[in-house]
Length: 143
Picture 1: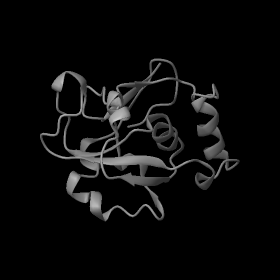
Picture 2: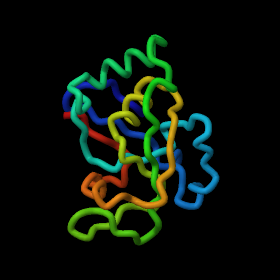
Picture 3: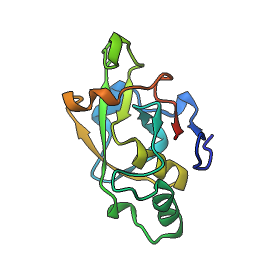
């Protein structure tokens, strides 16, 4: 179930919908993928992108067709293997496919549009801080 963007709103998806770690090699990023198959790496996102544009504007643009999926940078996805420690404090997250581009993933989920992706071989060291999810990436809160 996805809920509309708003401060404090949480978006969630059923656990059975996600790519597994073993699916990673079969994901075809030459096209678009279902955003509901990808897990969030963070527990929350800002309601604005780093350029201060509202995430809601992207959602609205995708819905009304003024923004095409190809106009938006691809989300970076990465495979997390079982027992791989990626969270601060040495906590583990569930094995699966996660994004480090959580606001774009959220926007495409809310718009109900498939999303472009790029596969990463591993989680970049400077992005590991993003793994703050406390629910294995099944939901995210908008602040």
